Each structure stands twice: as C-alpha cells, then as structure tokens.
Length: 133
Image 1 (spheres, helix red, strand yellow):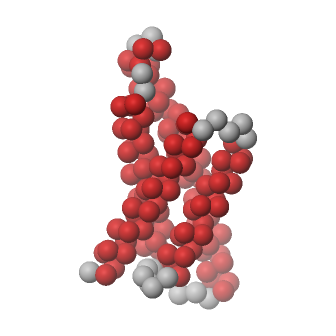
Image 2 (cartoon, helix red, strand yellow; image 1 turned 120 degrees about the horizontal axis):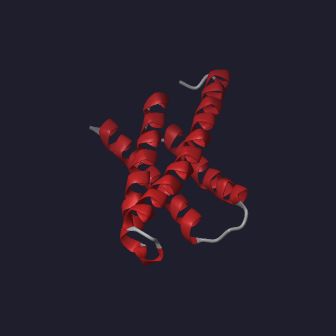
C-alpha cells in the first residue's frame, strides 16, 4: 500500500513539474530556450533525487517509469488546458489551430523526452558507479 501511494505521489509531482515547465514555455516569453531547459533541470533534478533517496524506498526503474508517466499525463493535460484557454479566431480554420498546437506540444514534449532519456542514462551510470541499490 505504501509503495502504491509513493508511486502516485511521484507521478503527481512530476505532472506538476512538467505542466509548469510547459506553461512557462508557452506563456512566459524568455528569449533563451537554454535558460528554460536549465530551469527545468534545476526544478526537476533535486526533487526527483530527493524522492529517490527518501523514505519512500522506490526502485530505480519504478521511479523512472513514474517520471515518464508524468511526462505523458502532463502533455495530455496541458494540451487540454491550452485548447480550452486559447482563442481560435486568429486561425484560418479550427483544424489548423489544433494541428499547430498538437505539433508544438509534441515537439516540446519530445525535447523533454530526449532530456529525460539522457538523464536516465547518466543516473543509471552514476547508480552503478556509486553502488546505490
């Protein structure tokens, strides 16, 4: 029971982190894309490392599965949020709006996924070198 609650908590926190990062990408006009990615790493890494080494005692692989599930759910939730809050009058057709939004969120989420895969590899190597179980 404790394991399920811990996994759900990690999924929810990662959904919030990813949704906030996507919100910042779309609504806060920071001219430097690398600065936004740095913000993502600064918020994402400490929280997940703390959860991984905390009292929850979650398996390394389960933790990363929770992170990927959080990314998938946050992409879906942010797509719903963005479609409900954006005025479609600026677009030629309603289909153009949804397709443009889908591609933008898909490309951004793919970028986050590539970062996560790289972090997964680095943490796996670190885990093996240090000997964490």
